[in-house]
Structure formats: structure tokens, C-alpha cells
Length: 386
Ligand SMILES: Nc1ncnc2c1ncn2[C@@H]1O[C@H](COP(=O)(O)OP(=O)(O)OP(=O)(O)O)[C@@H](O)[C@H]1O
Ligand SMILES: [Mg+2]
Image (cartoon, rainbow, N blue to C red; front, top):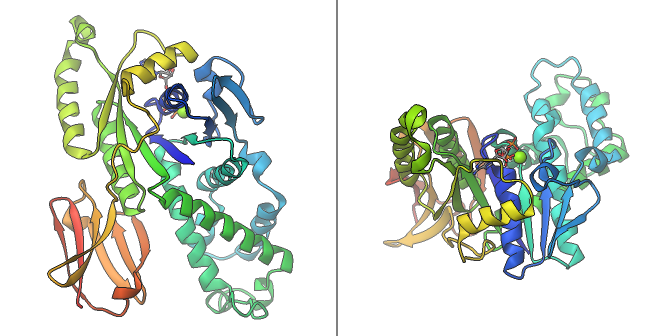
């Protein structure tokens, strides 16, 4: 099943374009599931009809659902949460717990669990996802790493009998650390779910991010950062959807200054996102309802099938050059001093600004020293000694 994630800053048109993409894909004969993981659901607003937690057919070939994370948040998570709160109640360094307890990323993650359910139904070829604004979606991408760190450091997976964890045990009473069986099992379930979702997100054969942007300075700047993070996390962005482009007729009189500003930003968009870009004009009124959003889909994709892969290029690649193995990560909008690369055992740790990703090294380079790392034309190259 193809998965298309619509991401972008608040208000840029993610929901409108997600619905447009879904309608366009259905017109190309796909059976489409349209799902929103943003807790501030608005599929219904865009479609001009009710859409709720029960899947409903909204157009020929399109079934839509607004996943309620609250309904999905099963007992297992609340158990974990209560236990963590208890555990860290009077601990000053709550960094890990904070990450785990912050809800925006988790809510989306829980909602994304739907992906595997939808796939299991076997009735859909395409799942179009309307994501929450980028901040929380990026947190969602980090969540699996944080959870894994937590699990690996604090639980002994192999010997379940020894569940107490040493680093924390020094700080809080060891007795409180021993999670009841139910909590431990809930953690394992959550971990499995998160891994499952992560596999789907990272599978470039199935999943692509569609970044929605407007030709406005602040929005372009934030989207550039999001694009780097998506690359760092290994998620393929196969298209950038440039929404709300002022048509020439609209930039007269009072709005004339927009023409020049927009031209600059459109150029900046071309420089910043080396992937296919599609454009939609600013309409004189909100595109609401199936007809208006089909029209938006036509504007954006023309005769193309919105479900196709617009690029096959992967943001993280392993290559061999001159007898040396090289790991490449596309980081086009990042400066050299914003990147930090270190190897820890069989993991490569790459930090870009405030985001950090652990990349499991392929067996062929585990144990090999890093011969060098350089940023070359927007690509981070980490070369391993053979
Ligand atoms: N090309 C366009 N021309 C005119 N209005 C548009 C266009 N695209 C979107 N809109 C309108 O802009 C508003 C915001 O769009 P939308 O809800 O799709 O954005 P969003 O990115 O999903 O927002 P949020 O971050 O709040 O979820 C809506 O009223 C929508 O109808
Ligand atoms: Mg929205």
C-alpha cells in the first residue's frame, strides 16, 4: 500500500492538498483511504461534510477517517504513563521522561498505528495521511529513537527477571523501578508498534512525504528545516507542493509588493528543494468540497497520477567509491557547523542542529574507523576505512 504523508507548517494547506491528492488518486483508479492524524481534525471542514472516527465514503473510491487518538489510546499507554509519572515525580532530570510523556508526537504515532490496520484490510492501494503541523510530526519521527534508548538502557530485554535499571536506580529508589508485569508488557507492545510504524515510514518503496509550502519567507525557512530533518530520518520527500501562489492578476494595487516578494521566495523554493515541485494558485475563495478539491488536484498534478513516486532517490545511501564505503545523507539546507557526526559501536550518531539520529551501520562497516566526513554540495559524506 502506498503511503503519502502531507506535512508542513500550520495553515499552509496540508489538509486541502491531502484531500485533493486522495481525490486525484481515486480518479486514477486507486482505492484510497484518507486519514487525518492531526488531533485538530479538519478533513470534514475541507470536504464540507461530517467525517469522524468511523470510516465513511466521501467520494467514489475514497474512504475517510479522522482517527481519534483519545479513543486509540488504549489502557496500555495510560498504565505506562502513570508508572512513569510516579517514577519520576521528584526527579530533577526529566529529559527522557519528558520526551516520552509529551503528547503531540505520541498522539500522531498512535494514530499512525492505523496504517497497519488499513493495510491489513487489504482493500486499499493508497493511504493519504493529513499530518499535524511539522513541529509535532518531527517529534513523532524522533520518538522511536527516544523510546528505543529508553528501552535499551532501562530494561534488560533478554533477562526479563532483571528489569531494574542501574543508571536510574542510583537516583531513585530501586524498588520503584521494578515495573509491574503489566507495565513491562505494555512497553513491549508500544515498542513493537513504534518499530512497525517506523518500518512503514522508512520504507521508500511505499512511503513518501509531500511537503506543503507557501511562497512566503517564514514558511519557506521552516520547511527547509523540516526537509533536512526528514532526510536525516531517512524519509523520502518525493514532491514539494507549493500552495497559494498569487496569480499575476491578484498582485496589483495594494497587493503589488507581493509580486516581487513571491518571486524571491519561489526562487528560494527551487534552490532549497531538489525534488519535483507542483504548484497551486491562491484561489479567490476557500476550496471546500469534493468538486473544488478535485479542481485543486488537477491544478497540482495535471494528468499525472498523484500516487506515483515522483522521485526514487533515497536521502540516505550507502555507496562504494574508490574501494571505500561511504554513507551519504542529503542535507541541502544545512551548514557545516550545524552537523556533528560520531560513531558509537554499531551506530552512527548524526546530529543536525537540535535533532539527533542514530543510524544502524551496515555489518560491512561495523568496526571500521571513520576516515572522514565532509559536506559536499548539500550531501554529508561519511567515509569508512576499509
Ligand atoms: N490554494 C488555496 N487558495 C485559497 N485558499 C486556500 C488554498 N489552500 C488552502 N486554502 C484555505 O486555507 C485554509 C487553511 O488550509 P488547510 O486547512 O488545508 O491548511 P492546513 O495546513 O491543513 O492547516 P492546519 O495546520 O491548521 O491543519 C483553509 O480555509 C483552506 O480552505
Ligand atoms: Mg490541517
